[in-house]
Image (cartoon, rainbow, N blue to C red):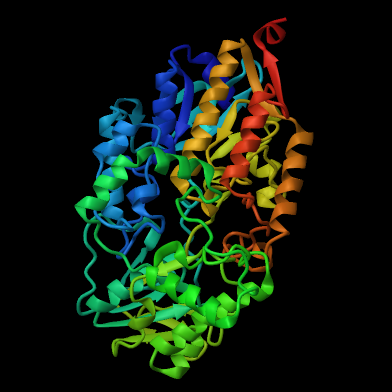
Length: 549
């Protein structure tokens, strides 16, 4: 029996105006907005509680790389002022406490069903409803399906030969246990030196008997130089709420950080170095915002690359290790990383570095990891191997639109991703994606991007109700035009020139493509507002009267 026929024979199927998948920051705000507008809404969340990626990413050293005073909602001044961050860059436990605070403060849990996977969502063209099947066997229907699954929630555990034979413990940073993991007295191997690996490595090194780092690609990283906020700073921040909200909604990054100078190559070397030194000491995002042309001008970019390579030489005592840690790709074109004593960690006697480009990993053995050169005996393996980003979380769900075509088929497993504004895709009426592919998403401050998307979607759904419109979906021509614009903007930068998870290169056999709108949040917001102001130009709207003829 098909899902459609099951729905039609079961007259007691529960129905909602909207179903939201995911109870992270985006799912919570979406629920709040829809409830405020009077829409019956249910959120389904696979985890036991709210938090999204911050529920799962509990690995040692997990920390946000946006300044804490910008990593929060600004739709409510009261909510903003009731919460106090303790440090410049908040750690995972504090961020999770904040998300729980929001859920409690807005009484959101009563409309969230936890421990529940949405296995499939099929669009029924006969009644224009989304028919949703849950892992507990329950079937429900909704007028609108809204995905709030995040961009980095599909953990990537590479299919290493022999992994099932390993006799020790192994963990993925994106699916970390809730109970404390003990490193003391153990030989630990960690595979991966992206953001999560760079955050975890210094912490694990302090506790483990010995740590072996298996690195494929060295990273440009600058110090976070984190510190505790003093009460006076917090007081001024809360008093300055309106300005912080303005910055989060009007700057390209969604942060209160602007570029220091226009071009790195237009300054004398001494002046340029001075700016870099100041940014390095300041820590955090300051370095990547040193000059406006670091992502567009190869010569300017190389000045930043060389500065960081020089810092690595100065910090790491062993010249051979320092050489292995030096990146050669364009700065910024992989996810910018900030660290707390990452390079210094390689000066410890209990830490060694293995370059798996020189000596690839051959297999996981019962005792550890075998490379082309030797076997490393280990008690524990940590996979800091990242995520199937952007499309991965969406394609894990069996989403089918008109004529039963799946999202995976339409996008050809990621080879031909097409959306309008990164919010919706043709052939899937009344489906909205929060921070979907071809939106600014991971290249801007996520709470800023989330607020913009949620508010646009909720305003759209309200418009549909107020104008008696049954369905909305992008026009094919509009999403082709948006895709072309996204690619044109990206190709004006250095980003597409570097293999990264931005382009899908971290996942074996995944089609390559740059699936992020890189024009900045401010320009993107203006485009979205323009579309809405013009009666949702680029979308096909079908009224109830037309449907019922």
